[in-house]
Structures are given as C-alpha cells and as structure tokens.
Image (cartoon, rainbow, N blue to C red):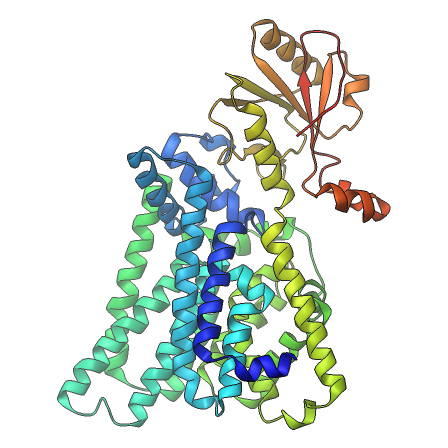
Length: 524
C-alpha cells in the first residue's frame, strides 16, 4: 500500500504537503528543545522591549557578553512591529518567528534539492529526498524552531549548496572570461556573506568554517574568489558587532568573550561531563533507535565515500572538535542534521532491489508509523513549561493585579537559581508572563509568609510557586492547590504507568493564597 502510494504521488504533491506540514509546525509546535533557545533569545528581546527581566535576572552569559545579539535583535524587531501595531502578544510573536524560520528552511531545502537533483539519478531518489527533508520527524521539528542551531544549520546547507554550484561553474569554465571573472568576485562576496552570517549566529560553527576554508585552499585556489569573500565576511562580522552593541549597550567582541569564558577559563567544565563516545550513542537513543542509527550510519558512510567533498570538510572538524570537549549535548550536532536526508538517500542509492522483500516493506511501514506518531506528538502535545504559561494566563485573566511568590533558591517555570555564576543569580522567564502578574522572590519561608499575608490583606491576588507537593497541608497560610497537567485526562487515566505524567509537574506546584480558611482543590 505504501509503495503504491509512493509511486503515484508526484514531486509537486510532496512539496506542497511538506509546506503544509511546516506551516502546521510553525503554528502549533510550541516550547524550546533547550532552555538557551528561550533565555538567550526571547528573554533578551523582552528585556529590550519592556525592560524586564532586569539585567541582574538575565542568564549568566549576559553580564559576560558572550552570546550573539543577532537573533535577539530579530526577535526584538518582530516584537517592536507588533507593539507599534498595538497587537503585541508573545504567542503571536513566536508564531511569526517560527513562520519565518519555516520559510527559510523550505527555501534552503529546495535550493539544496535543485543543487543535488542531477546526482539523484531517479525520480524515486528525488521523492525520497523531499520526503525525508520535509517529513522526517526531527527535521520537521527543527525547521521551524527559532534557535541558533536551526539557523546555523540552514546556513550550513545554504553555504554547501552555493559552493557546489560555484564548483560546477568553475568546472565548466564559466569564470574564465572577463565577465566571468567579475561574476567570480560576486560569488566570493556571496559565499563570504553566508559564511560570516553562519559564524555570527553561532560561534561554534567557526570549526566548520575553518574546514571550509582549508577545503577552498586545497581544492579551489581562486584568488579572485578569495578577494570577493573578504568584504562579504567583513560586512557580516560588522553586522554581528552592531547587534552585540545593541544588545549589551557597549562595544564588545562576543566571539572572543565566548572563547575566553568557555574554553580558556574552562567555565564549560562546570557543566555535566560526558565520555568521548557520547555522540556515538546519544543520536541513536534520542533520535529513536532506528532513525538515530540510520542517520549515524548514513553520515559516517558519506564521509568515507566522499573524503574530498566540501560537506565532509565542513562537518568532520565541526563534529570532531565536539568529541574532545568535556561538556557534550546532542543539540550541538543539530546543524549537521540538515544534511541527513541527503546522506540517507546516498546510503540506500542503488539498493532498491535488495530491500524489495515483504519483510523490508513491513519494516519501512513500521518506521513510517513511528515517524508519524512522533510528528503528531510534537504537534499536539505542548511542553510542560508552555502549558504552565497557559495555565497562569488563564488564572490571571480578569483578576486585576496578581503576584507570584517563590523562594529564590527553588526552581519554577518562571525562575531558577544559577549557582555556577559568580555571584549566584536568580534567572527569570518573563516572556510569557501575563501583564498583570508580578514575580517576587523571597529568601526564606518566613519572609515569603509575611509577604503573602501583607499582599493578601491589601486585596492582591497571590499565588505561591513551590516544588513541595504538600505545601497546602504544612504551610501556616491558607492555600488552595491549583491542579494542572499538560497531558489529556485519558492519558493520565489509562497510560500513567509509574506515575510518569507527574514527572514534569510534581515539583512545579501552584498554590493560591486564600484570605479565608478553605482548602479546596481546583483544576484548570
């Protein structure tokens, strides 16, 4: 059935379906894969728009001036337009950012497809490239999220595509004549601009760009191209410098600050360490054992089969350096995932007859069902923090001025203590916070109790955010627990094995402070 459907569907139909899926993800997929996506982009933009969080409550990287200002500036521009139009909403702003991210991802994917289309020798291979590029569950997820990993991954793919196109023109003698030499200089400007943009978005891509530069020196010794790349790179670095000046309020060199703090001062060593082989197992476990294993095998095979390819020279140093860093996270490899659809098609090229048996067709059908399940989950299930923000928005609606209290050293979805910074600081997440909600931190339970009584006596609506699930029974205050869960009731009722649905919320409790002695649970 799947094979018949695959034969009948056209490339244009796959393209339109892929655009529709990207649109759905942009509008429905909420939450960040990693907190850096939120705290180092959205919170920075919110601070520039509205003055909150205060600088002392921003992530520890802010006072060290070691993060790029490019994406916060882009998020600020979107927010500034919405504020000027009188329709500011954090949810609308994120939707716009994800729509722009999805548009870029689709455009770059199609450009890369047109670049390698002639290498895909059959229509079946071309269909598989588009299907994997649009519908592989982690690709659909990454395409729309406004993170440095997503943007740098797209720029990686764009740089590789443009370089392959330039190399083909060079082989055809397109740059030999006088007009061709002028075009070669323009190509240099374009390639330099894309390379520079990749770097100012995510400084770690410098390792890949180093490999890219060495490849150019070894396999494309064209001095006019190099001359054109210089102004392209310089312009992008200047724009990055201006973005950092806007973010930090003074001239600074954020890439150097990043290198100095994380590498030279070994601040990265304060985070969790992983063994060198982490990157050989994490993609398999986190990407789904079948999808992750196939992606890993396809990538390694491509490097082995194409040792002189520009993509190999870009990705090998980028990936290899991360093996030698003590702190490892799978998201550091996300920029390389944008090449995985191509690698997978290369892996199975010419092997159609070998996998034509019924058993292989059943295996493919099982993978398709698993992939569809992962896609549906990401589309329909909000992350716990996003659901918490929706709960608080509903709670604060029509309540006048409200105040949320918590102990400074306790983690909530609105704040957390970062102890590896000097001095330790409370980092706040105010981007999704309702406009009528104020967030206050107390040093001790006694101080929190006194603050709650004073605010309640003044007629303010007060909630306490606490990791203690029994606070309503043990606190001297009269509290009512606001029961919430990001999961549907039927999931909690029938599939809550070992109470797994409580894992994300058991330490993120909301308690309403009551002026009278009543302790009735309420659900939102």
